[in-house]
Image (cartoon, rainbow, N blue to C red; front, top):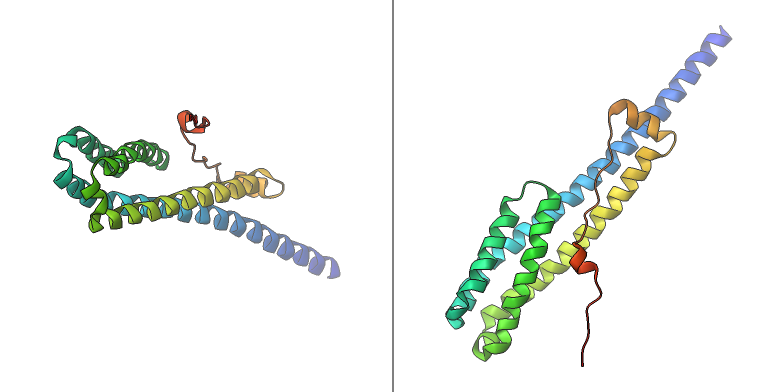
Length: 183
């Protein structure tokens, strides 16, 4: 009788430990998904601001049509991308072209003084910061999740339930190079 009680107690304790390990993996995975969603939200916010920016710039710099067309095209690429990494890659390209639009303001003092343009620039800048934070938070959470599914004893639970590693967001090689400063 005592042996049966001991065996039942051991099985219950092992079941509780197993459930805790499984629930921990689910928590890590869901947090990574949440941060992925936050990136989507910020990219959507950014793409929603772009048409207003383009229209504002058009009024002052109508001959910069090619740059503005490229902004719209890249905005659509971000919106239509299938995977998170594809969205981030398209967003990186969009960021490069937006820098050209921001540089246009230097050539058009009236545009630079326009309150709507200034407000949009500030909103885009704030959104850029939020996107950067969301990317960093996502990669941090992916690191925690990937570590959890690779370490013992969670790796046993992860293998049984089909938890697989998640991919980190990467930055393009061109952005890894140090900027060249010339005086």
